[in-house]
Image (cartoon, rainbow, N blue to C red; front, side, top):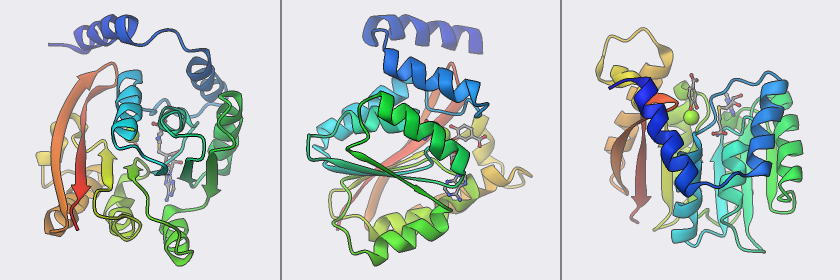
Length: 222
Ligand code: SAH
Ligand code: DHB
Ligand code: MG
């Protein structure tokens, strides 16, 4: 099976299940125009994130890695009126594009973008002693994942759902000798996840218009 076939199936289900959406399409167009990399989640994965947040009745969501705010918009749409999403982004330019896109989607009141490395903004969040998050989406630089997961556990409660994107990388994740720092980042993350007895997780491989990848999803148990 080929990328062309996977893309055709994404398009088929996209038409059936995801009606044209001016806010999300505009977010991708503006991100493209600003030359952000097209590494946002696919529409079907974005909708899955929204549905998971709704199933979880999430009122507080944390995202690590904003880019142009595409996944942010999907997630923030799941929030009730008083809900809040905090999204962490290293690049000021990405945060600026995301801020515009989130505003165009009418979600500025619920979304706060914090600019800086998540390795700094996560400890700062812990220092604020804010209430725990109900759902945490890890999707920033892969070498940081292990560290971000440790901080995420401190910002969670029993029942918090944690999702980490891009944990398969064309299957390279099984190669212990990979020279790709992103693959090694995921492998380090997997060691930390495995050692964390308070987190019960599974890994799901995906194919589609974005190629062959996957995500880890799990729940904090205590
Ligand atoms: N979640 C987005 C895609 C995120 S791409 C979506 O699906 O729409 C990964 C993002 O992480 C990029 O914008 C990149 O600038 C950001 N990033 C990279 N290193 C980071 C760090 N140390 N802290 C926070 N964000 C970082
Ligand atoms: C990359 C990062 C992502 O978050 C993604 O979804 C795809 C690719 C990357 O860094 O290559
Ligand atoms: Mg990703």
